[in-house]
Image (cartoon, rainbow, N blue to C red; front, side, top):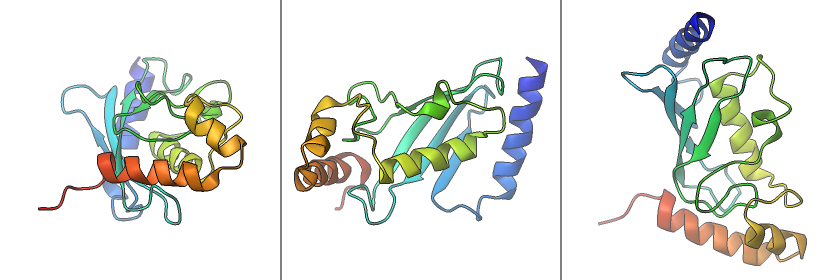
Length: 157
């Protein structure tokens, strides 16, 4: 557990130092628990998520970095690789392809890349995956854009 704490403190310092370097990601450590983090990520441009800000929750295991963090969307998102109700994310690096070389920041980058390039063949959201697999790109983008507007964009007025 001491090694994971040291690693997380190191990542915390890096996040503080590099805040301006990656404007699409804002990682924040819980004040009272180094094993709980949240992130705000910006939806990638030229996707239905553009303009949205999505909140992620990180639960970091005591065996970190030997085991991956558990990450889920707190913001509702219509995406084939995200469970609509729980926010669970289907991403290989969070499961069997994890490496201790990954950091919480690089996990956020991988999630942004997944948002831009969905994998409809391993869906957690079957409705979203089926739209893409059947070639209904317009239908998928329209639903994803609608949920982005409803859940991930600041309310006006």
